[in-house]
Image 1 (cartoon, rainbow, N blue to C red):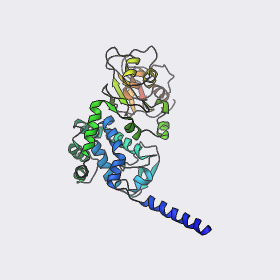
Image 2 (cartoon, rainbow, N blue to C red):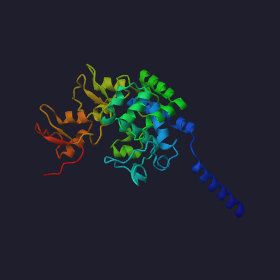
Image 3 (cartoon, one colour):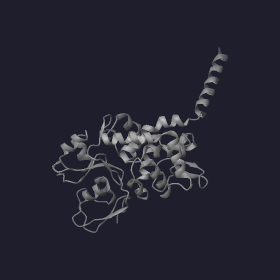
Image 4 (cartoon, rainbow, N blue to C red):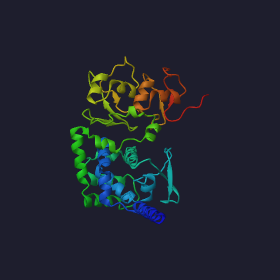
Length: 329
């Protein structure tokens, strides 16, 4: 009996090791991550074919050490703004720092965030279905040093018919909605919500179809927002986006008595605890709330970083910190 149990345990361990070492095929990788790529296209206007091709190329179809051990499918390095976990790997230099994610979906979201930097702004002037233009543009903007990088992306896209996912993404954009299953593909982890000070209740539209009929845009701080229409109220915006009025107020630091003006930026996801820009000089007529909305930073965080009491209005010309807390003088 002991011999049989030992044999079973040995066989189980062998199978477990085999399953761990088994390589993912390209078709399996595409099937697993196409929804995440389409979701990023609908939300951020990055071609799904480009996202998939880059993931395939950078992660070796999800088989690289970075992909397996760090869920990093795009070889994104730590950089100075990374505060999460990391992993070391030889690249251009030995023992370089790469980002480590709780799950691969977070890697896809961070890849989009990376491409939203000003450096890649020219890409967003291209059509979302122009994968050739995007591939060449990525190389031109300095995404990769390999002179054949653009050609390799195009080859992967055409050899695997990835352009069909761009067409699928465009159909969703025109329809003005993201099916629930795609939203679930890139749902933030509990750790990501904690890092961004976002509760599970704050996540916009959990478990329902996301409506983009109001031409949803993405801010510089990577937050979804809409532009207010004439006559808008908390209720009309909330109704259009399947949100609750209290969410509109909370995400935008509005009071119950606040009035919404035509053309005003209305965030439909929580603002961040810090902005992309380091500082802002307060101008004539600007309020702390104006600065908060302009940069997508929570009003409470803006006060705290500048050692100001809530409701305090600094003088014109005051230099406000948007990232680090100012040392008390």
